[in-house]
Image: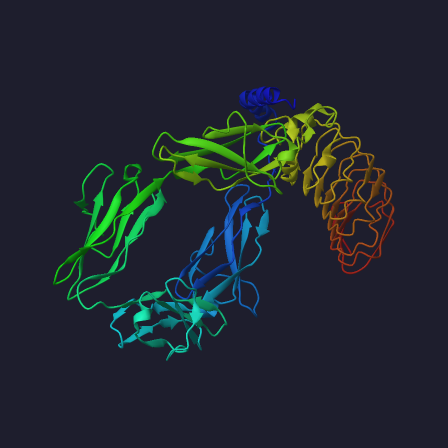
Length: 600
């Protein structure tokens, strides 16, 4: 069954027969209640660093049973976790406007599903830096004049300032000029300052640093328009925003007119909304590849045209496979949809967890859909596609992760010898491949098989995450749930059990084993048990051990003549027959004799 063709045929057969099998099962046993998958987090929130006043968004993605609910919580650096009253606190995307006081706050989300499963994400941190409400602006000044650069910030005070300068071919260096440690820097312009940039590093009261934008100093020419910043060539994907910017000085009011030229055309004035501004924006289409862009700048005395630069358009990704989880032996298909100057070519690449990206030589490696038969050795591999358009422009998709799960446990008579129980287990096979994978097994937290005429529960031990088991009204002569360590609820009433040993189930809180043939019930190590119903059996004694939490015991219709419950400090109700000659128990216990209240 590990061969891909057989696996595909089996999967197809299971899929086609699912409706028929489901109808038959529904007619016989109705819907299958009690099966709940755990909430699974697929994308966790991430720590953020933002400036005061910016919008912050924390997001979580999860899957579970039915409708999910969310509750975001916050914690100050010295406080405790508290539910947020924000309007978005009960959604998957929590937003807030960052304030200086939010610095160091932690955020997390509690996700619950309708099955009662819940998961809490790890806490992530919000760092809030000062916000620049006024950035330094480019300046044009003559030699010997004063050029001032200023910033205004908002955030946690007090603020400290350090202005830095950078020559056209140098690196940023701290300035020692007048005001270099204040909000305003003053420079006496010299000829060598032309093209210098200036910025301010601000440290807020929390110790967080933020850099302002750089402002350029242009040493003015004697007269005429001076283009101080030429537009630059750019490459963007299809659908992306291409931005072209110019800066110029001149006499009086300055106006702009951006122009474009196709590879075989002539220069034309653009009619775009931004065509008369210093910043010109184009939404790139495939037909824009190779276009040239320039700007005509005018002042009161004349005009000057900027350099012409080229717009290159590379393929744009419309959609792609983000990640896959596949069973060993099945096929995994990674897909990409792209738009660009056609025809597009594809080259899929792979990378193992400790290796480098390599071109795949698979038959489908040069198609938009890349398929491989998965082996366990592929677990942790990443896949991406390099897309090349007709002009040789390339775009690479984001890496997609592959998780491989073992084939799992076969759903057959070797593991589940009772045919009725085996049929029930087949409904837990979510992908219909005839195996229980690790994820499918771990998703099973409750099983309800009441009244299905099951005579053997062999195989129940594989469900290690099982919390609730309802198996009443069957034909069970024995039961072994020692491997179900997380079991808290067990109803095995109305069977034919003679001995029931639950001393390995130390998380059990509820037990109903009534209407069996029990002569021995071992629960002396189950110190978490709170409710015990064992009526209509053949028991001669009940030994709860050092249990201090048991509240209710119903043991009528047995062969019990004496009960000693010295350690049951929280016992509230005790139901017994009149044949019981002596009862020893602590505290105020309500005793029901033959179904009627007796003196406690």
